[in-house]
Image 1 (cartoon, rainbow, N blue to C red):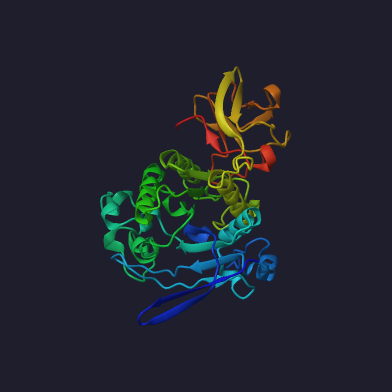
Image 2 (cartoon, rainbow, N blue to C red):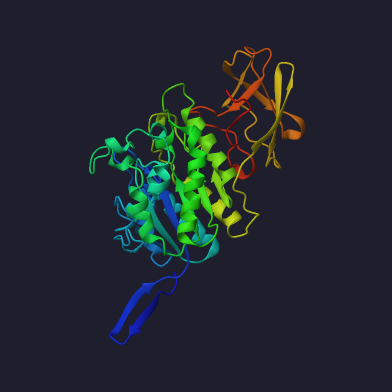
Length: 398
């Protein structure tokens, strides 16, 4: 552990001593329920490996601390909010954000400094919930997720957690003066019905947050939404994931991790998948690489670069493909389509230099487009360097 400090603040009227203080890296964990999800899990939604984490959490008493900002909605910006820093112990760790916990564990192990987590999230919240009034009310009502219309908002009602502005006012604004290293963000499920607006609004949110903190372009790291069946044509989840990546292109000093391999087949209708350890660790790899300058720690698997159609096959090239791919057999998740825009599962084989991939389907004699894991629920099994998953993509704009 590390030696806690005591700080005494004095003036002519007396003094106050603050004890058991650690100095280290502090990250805000924002978003909705998958970021909120504690090690103890939710009803019918366990976190894999959580019992061991909670049992051993006392080892991190002077290494990891967490403050949970209570769910507080307000129509106007508030100056204060309740919240107390908690030490890590079997009595407290169960309600720590599972993603945040595993992020902090890896960061602490690598950097050898204490890590503090500010857990500021609300299950079911939309990106608009974390924006100020003047921004949200400039958006047309029919572009907001269901329940966000001002006419439908009732304090304490079912849709209250969907309400725009209230979390910005009641939870985020009051902590704006707390110095942070950066933001972690796991959100988007509630916005899945409006992917066409998400990237721009998330970029706006990040700018607002950074201006609020006044610490420059604080790092902003996203979690790609895990596989889950949203309904409709089966691509709503894929389109919001695509919007998440477009947001990264709009936001300076930002990044995103891939999670298309972090669900079990039986979790197709479980929006809270149990694999949270890998999510937190991948966020830590991203932070270690981009924020702490450890560029020898990769954080992203192979990412689509280009493609070439050759008769009934399509050859695909990738960035981050230095060490090729794994596995070479029984690769799933690729689909090809012809001019009719109907996609069929594709066979996959290695291409030039063990790096490119070649895909085809006997049902598509003249392919024009290829997709990888571009569905609500498609678990990818293809990885690249050091086991990081291939990033989902598509070559069409249909």
